[in-house]
Length: 480
Image (cartoon, rainbow, N blue to C red; front, top):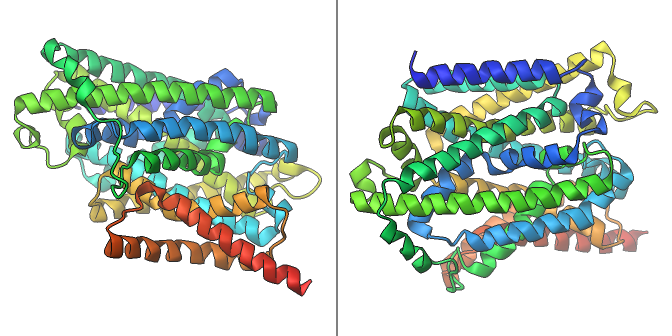
């Protein structure tokens, strides 16, 4: 076995042992909510791994080569978005004491709206997790030389095994270990690069752009800032996977502390990733550019350098760090998708017993079958992406999110910031119409005015949903 394969085997055994220790009795309450006893500092630190993911690990440093520091306004937007989540969304979810955040939609509009919200979350998470897992498996495929589908199967199987018993409770504690390994890798690669770069060149960092002032450009600073804000609100505050961890804290105060701590740590970690990308740019340019290192895209910079330029120790550490950056988000995706299906579609939360009403052996078996089915969907998504991927992965994720999270953003915003009623039957049609209208609008602005909406597509999508719900509400009120 190669050192990479041995490292992965050790990593897998570690996860399975931690799963066994933290899984407890494997109850549904533990799986869905971690019994609402998770310490907020542990949740905050572990959420860094879930928020960063293997996509950030690979793509953010690589994107610096072409886009310099234009990611910075979006990072600032992330922080503002986290504050909105803490001040607006968390109090609502804690007041209702929901297991799935889409329970709010049932209270506000009705069961059809709840299931619509849960469906769009399911689609968003399945695609997002598929892309995140895909990039890691692609790198493992290149590094190990194994069949892509075989690696994908082993990866998803380990994901299923270590989350099967303890669910959220296991993920919260294993995320701490995985986040630590990811950060150790990041710092080690920076140190290795610093030893190979002429330090006199480091002063050029001040010349790297942080702001794009061209309003028509997709990376315009205002678009980036607003996109960062709304991406965080949508992909954290309206995402069951991320909010499930926040709701595992014992009370609202602890959860708010968790959000602010997570925001601060993630901003700092992203700064390290940008600095790593800057070092990559200097090093690659000193060698003669992308073609000189055998790279055809910026997503290949980190894997090529880590596996061929800094020795076997950094190579093994790179794969461990990459996997550690991926499993937290992938584990959260599998657990939250299972929770959403069980609670929002199968009614696990109904009845006087709440979550506990499905603590019977049959309830646990149903949860296990749901989790297994979603694992199969994830595997199919990853394999499909292997054949259709043709874009920078981080851009692909945000592009997908713009279409699938937009309706969630609009529905929640309408529910929270207005007191109008809307027919529960109309919401599913509105939610499906909004992305289509948004797609047509994006094509129109590019062809007529050369104006690229960029990541602000999410905001436009949410706004279209909001307006359509307002119009539907006018008709609903007239009929009443």
